[in-house]
Image (cartoon, rainbow, N blue to C red):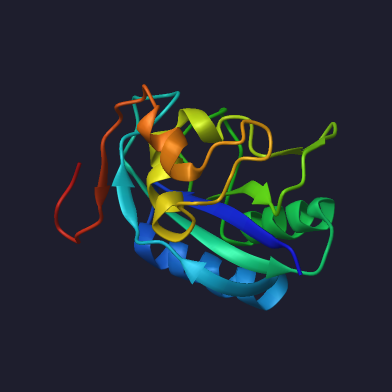
Length: 165
């Protein structure tokens, strides 16, 4: 079964409970959750005038296609209350497909690897927790190498309840 890396993010509502529920629903409906990174509190990226995010990366063993993975993760987003108002805006939950094993895919609805993965500290730091040596299939660099070369200096801190970025 392919290993798929998913990025979970939330910056509205009970962020911790939402991430936990998303992981549970992914385990029920998408595939076996094999690994989970720590949870990180992160500065917003793209649209910066919004609350901080909690982000986590999970590795999932999947036996469905990338397109079906997208369909199922978007259904989970909707069930958890996701409404798409603005690109990179505030949200109850966001589930992004970072990698689908070593697949490179470009369709009208899905690009894998995620097109901004290598530009985002909030993605690479939790990904490095569970896949530091995973090589990007296009850039042929590991997560650690991408992180070390990253110009993004957005705040990414291990989440501690009661503290904020």
